[in-house]
Amino acid sequence: MVDVSDPQIFPEDWTTALVLVAHPDDPEYGMAAAVARWTAQGKNVIYGLATSGEAGIAGMSPGTAGPVREEEQRRSAAVVGVDEVRFWGYPDSELRNTEELRTSVAKSLSRYDPDVVITLWGGPDWGNGVPNQSDHMEFTRAVAQVVADRDLRAFQTSPYPTLIVDVSGYVERAVESLAEHRQYLSVLDPQTPVIEQSRAQVASATGPRGEFRHAVGFQPLG
Ligand SMILES: [Zn+2]
Image (cartoon, rainbow, N blue to C red; front, side, top):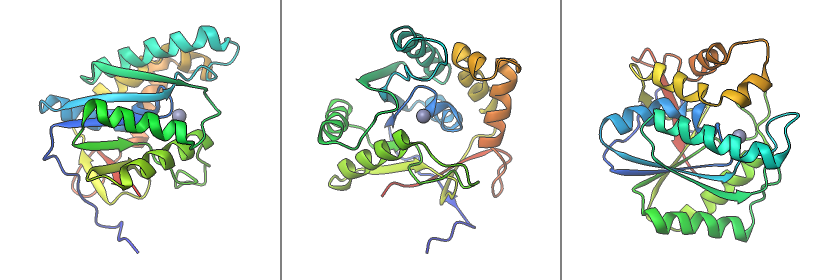
């Protein structure tokens, strides 16, 4: 049983991180605050996304939504210092941990040769009873399987963190980053201004932990 009551500091003795996620906006619910810290330190962070999130905007056809979401993701990444964003073109909402998907993960690792890999939480729920999405769970399993045989440090965001990143000073940047998903968020909740949605979401993902006013939690993958 891992003791989650006393998380350790996330290691920062690395140069290049590959962030692998299922959808646009997956990096922006917390992780982006840590990414902002790391790029400010001069580290290189790359995003790889299995899908373009084309099923994610109600009332908008996938053919229209895909490019919109890709563009929003690129802007969002740029806000936290990430210039390299790759979309792999898998169908949104239909991700499965297949050989093909694992091959795409492996290719991405070969291409960027990262020191660390970071992905989104793949557990069955978010720690508050809200179930995780199938796409996230399938994708994280695929990443875990591929990195298992390699000499590579890999992490996932976690509602039960054993590792934390102090993101004090980077929360506003993360808010601006999530707010770049303008069309997505404005359809998701038309009643609440995008910046307010973004502020609330990032606040809940970067709450106080240990000695830090704002922290993002991770755990080793696998
Ligand atoms: Zn997602």
